[in-house]
Structure formats: structure tokens, C-alpha cells
Amino acid sequence: METRIPLSVDSGFHVNSNAPSDPSLIPLKLTWKVTGALEPGSIIYPKASIEKYTFAPEGLSVLTGNFTVVANFKIAGNAPAGPGLAEGQLRYQACNSTTCFPPKTVPVKISYMVQ
Picture 1 (cartoon, one colour):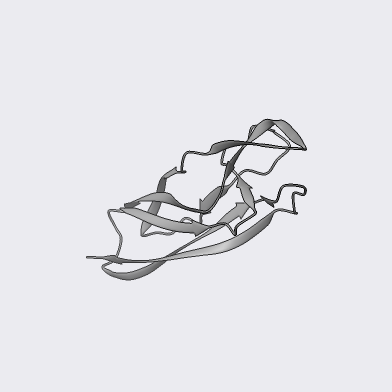
Picture 2 (cartoon, one colour):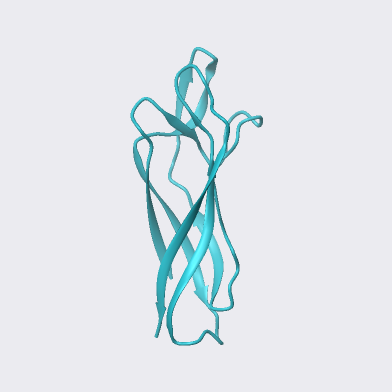
């Protein structure tokens, strides 16, 4: 099962990609709580762009604007039929052209139906 999660970063800001070019920066990371019905699979992050800033003239791997993260799940063989809710969290660090802000973690909830 593939789920597309649309994300949006306000104009003038960026978030570090899932593979930041500076190891001291916090990557964009989506994680899931394991339930009996769904088994988390691969997560596909969008291609980042390399942008240069005064504090990082060599460039940083970032995401801006609107983009989508794709989460894949496998339905467990013993999953009961009916609705369910996959719960996870998205961790990110937002920055503007002069400052990186403390990282945040926000909940992500996806409804699903096992038939």
C-alpha cells in the first residue's frame, strides 16, 4: 500500500532534506509506530535541491515549497478487515536564509481500510 503525504514549507523557509549535506543539521525523517495490521516499508523522499546561503556557501541539501513524501506499507497477513489508523511522526528542522530553528516533531495520521 502506497500513501502520498503532501507537505508544504512556507515561502522564505526551507527544511533540510532527509540526507543533509552538513551532518550537524537535522534531517527530514518520517517514522511510523508499528501496529498489528500494517508493517511500515520504504519511505521515498523527494529529490532535494542544493542551495547556497551566506552561512553555507558550499550549499545545503534542502526542500522548499510543496513536495510529497511517499510511505509504503505492507498489510499483515493476520490484519483484521475494517478501518484503521496508521500513526507516525515527522521530524524536521526549518531554516530561513539566516537562521536554523530548533527541530520539531509533528504527528502524522493516515486512515486506511483493510478489505
